[in-house]
Image 1 (cartoon, rainbow, N blue to C red):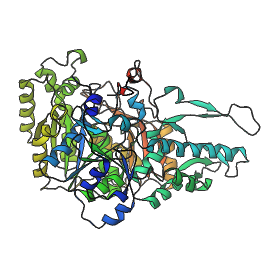
Image 2: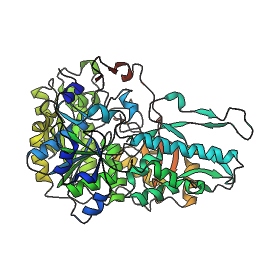
Image 3: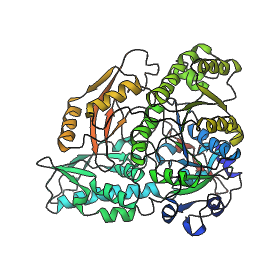
Image 4: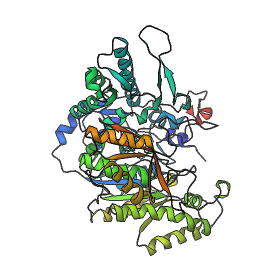
Length: 554
C-alpha cells in the first residue's frame, strides 16, 4: 500500500495560476511561493465584497481516538465530490503545526487520494505564517523584559505574556528566565506555549481585516501593574512592528487537492487548547468565490464545532447550512471499550456502546444548536457488513442521515453520496440556537457548555479560577465568549473516561483573559498549552532519501 506522501508525489499538480483562475482570481491577485503555493492578495476581497456569500458546510467529528478518524481526509474528499457533481466548491482548512507533525498525530493534509498538496511543504514550513506568529509573539516578550530592564515605566508587577515555539517541548512548560546576573535583570518564573496556542494565532484567525488585526493586537494584555490595571501591547508602542511581521501571514494561502480543486489554508489554532478554526478572512473569501465552502473545526464537536458555533460564527456573522459529523467503526468500538489491538475484529457489542458518543455529538448539533447534520462514516477495509448495517439501523431509528465514504481509496468519487445528500440538505437551512448569552456570567457560560454540550453534572472552580474570574468581571470583560481548553479524547475533562457513563464534573483550574482575541480561556483537567512528545515521536521516522525526497511524513 502506498504511503500518503508517495500518492501525493505521484500526482501531477497544476500550476497555482490555473487553480486561481478556476475560482476567478487573476495572476496579479496572487503572490506565488513556487509553482504550487500562493498567497492571495487582499485586493481581491474589496473586489468581491458585494457578492452574495455561498453556503458553508462545517465538518466535525466524534471525540477522536489514537486510531485517527480522518476528519480532514473526509473534508478534502467531500470538496472534491461537491465539485464532481457540479457544485462550485472551495475547501477552507487550518494550517498544520510542526508539533503534531513531529509528535504523535502526524500531518494535517488528509490521506490517500483525498489530500491537499504539496503535502510535505504544507506540513512543514508552508508559507511561513506560523513562524511569523512565533516571531511576533516573542518580540512582545523581548520588549517587555527590555522595558523592565530600562526602568519599568509601566510599572509591571506581573508579566502574563508567554514566549512560544511551534514544537512539542514539555521541558519549556515552566522555566526561569533572567539568570544572566546582569544589573537590572530580575529572574522570573515563566513558561512557553506552543505557537498555535498563542493569542496572536487567535487574533489572526478572528480578525476581519488589517485594521481589525491592528486593533486586536494592541488590546492584548501582557501583564498587570501594582494596582491590578492591565498593561496592553499598545502601551509598549510596538503594534506597528507586529503588523509588519504579520503583513504576509494575514493573507490566505491557496493550494490544491490531488483532484486539482482549490483549497484555502490559513491559520491553525488547536481546538483542545485554542478555538480550533481557520481564519475568518479565509472562510469569508472562500464563500464569496464559491457556491459552497467546506471548512473543518478541530477535534470533536464538543471542542472545535462548539467554538466554531459559539465564537467564530458570532464574530463572522455566519451560520453553516449543514454539519458533517465524521466517525469510524473502529473509533466507535474503541469508545465502547474495545482494546486497540483487537479493533479489527467484528463486535456489535462494543459498537453498540460506542455509538453513544456519536449520538451525544449528533444531539448537540441537531437539538442544542438546531442545525442540519449528517453522519459520514469513514470506511475502512476491515469494517464488516454487519457492523455497518447495525450502525445504519441505529441512526435510522433516530431519523439521522448517514453516508458511507471511501475517500482515502477513491478520492472525491468515494463521497458522491455524501455530496448529494448535503446539497439537498442545504436547501432547508436552520437558524443557529444559542448555548449561552453574552450577558450570562462567566460561571454560567462555563456551566451551560459543560452541562449542555459535554453532559456534565456541573463544574468545580479552583480558588485560583474564582479569583481570576472576579478580576475579569471587575475589569468589565465578562461579555466575552468562553474558549474551553479540555482533553479531546473524552466529553469529560478526563482523557481516560471514554464512556462517561457515571456522572462527572468539569474541573476548572485556571482562567485566562485574551482581550485581543476577545474570549476567555477556561483551562480544565490536566490540559497543557505546551504539549509533549510521545515515547516514540514521528520525528524518528522522517528523513530525506537518496533522491532528496522527504519520507516518513504521514
